[in-house]
Length: 468
Image (cartoon, rainbow, N blue to C red):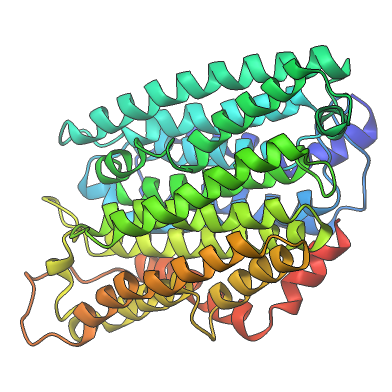
């Protein structure tokens, strides 16, 4: 490994070294505060290194590219990891989590997400995807107080194995067509006018595998059950982090101008079906976790519209969208963790009645996340959706843009229902624990960032634009 390789890998090495240190410390002491502080220090070091290091070439033999938006994604996934740890302070203690192993798995998952987001070759893509997926398998089943987590992990594992096989076969076909593992050249080979049929089949298999990971219909069937069975902080990392990482990988795999007509039609069908299926299913939900699961299907369908645009504006819109979505998802599940007790989480919508008055700070954070999901200003969700739809219209994809606008309009109904139960009900739900400072911060930090993105979106758009 050269000096440049080492420097480029330092942010993710900080996460991995922190994970190993947390594992060792967990054997030496049972003081949760010390272990969690070390995990947060590792996350802060990774984010600072990503910001402060100079521009660097690809690392690890060209598998990863730490420059450009790779820096942004390291900071973003580090932030999501910090939110997950903050949300787990009381939750983990009351549910018997082994702190050292739990925090180490979160750090390993964040490192894998960073690798996937900065992948420059098929090897890097697979390594990143496999790394955080394996960590999430264990995290989903981490709670030892019931079988729901084990069942959810088994479903996620079985679907992940199918998706992994499809991805490997698809990448093999793309390699056979292009003769290279470079992601950008793989995409160019499948979009060429004389591309062989097995190249298009390979891209279709890769898209289907990644549709499993980001819950595009009809590959979304695992999502509600896994969200419902996973611990709330883990579900937040799974929803906000893993899907954002795969979207970031898709930006490399499907760069602007490299989407063939056949791939575009497949992606269009997945986006349209996701908008329709997710919207209709979300309207019927009475469980907040399942509502968030089906709403994620709609959100990913909307993000796919930006990919369909096939231009630089669409790529920038998707990058902004994944940051907004990750923050809103992390904040929503952190709310569930903050008000969970040893018996259950406030999943049923009826459990939210009156919490806006009895737990005002965390309820306000959830309300901001719901407004962002709905695309209502002044949250970052409004600008994210606006950018995606504008990019699609400029590319001539106005039909799917109209479908996305309609889905966003209907989604206001089920997002506002959550807010109405928080603030506009005379009946009181069962008493919930008073959140600790760390848990309150885990909910309010994403909410504040979503408001900042809505008021000053140029801060993030300038960073994204400089990396593309």
